Length: 207
Ligand SMILES: CC(C)(COP(=O)(O)OP(=O)(O)OC[C@H]1O[C@@H](n2cnc3c(N)ncnc32)[C@H](O)[C@@H]1OP(=O)(O)O)[C@@H](O)C(=O)NCCC(=O)NCCS
Image (cartoon, rainbow, N blue to C red; front, top):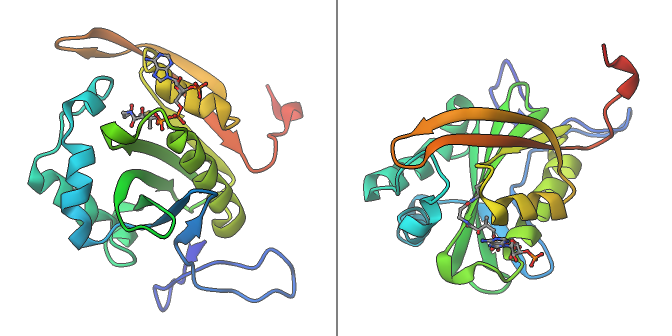
């Protein structure tokens, strides 16, 4: 994906030489889920996800205020706000249903070949395999439809659910930050960094 320097529109470049460029469509399905970009009117449903204290047991930030959830959505609106924030926020619903069960944020590093993931589910929707299914789905979407080459995610070392989701999705540990952050209540936090590549990195370039 790139942003045209003259018209400022985002386009997907064709992977083949004679292919045709297209505009990105940010909607896709997995076996049980439908994912699409968050809209302003989703804020109440997303606030259930972003305001739950249990969901922040391993986060550096606090549960969102209503304004915080609204701001999260606003910053990610495509294309106008995305052009500045480089963040897309996807909602996930069961297929054929509109109820929002969780969200995945995708923060791109320019020029849109690499992205960091953040994911969170409504507390009553966890441990049903939906985290793994949605992360696998977004990775496939980013690789195949947006042309991303590398996807990364960092987590608290103690966040077993998150680490399991990443490992089951094929992410491998690329690094480990000891004493990454000193939390006022949890003390020193360690943070493994996970990555997944569209095509395996060239091991021969290692110094
Ligand atoms: C992380 C999160 C998205 C996972 O979603 P989910 O739908 O519950 O994940 P899944 O059901 O696909 O898989 C969770 C796995 O973790 C395991 N797990 C969950 N809690 C665990 C714990 N406390 N200790 C060990 N394993 C745990 C589950 O058993 C499951 O593994 P299995 O399929 O091998 O049995 C969800 O827990 C969540 O929203 N957490 C709060 C926010 C968060 O931590 N986000 C991640 C930031 S990096």
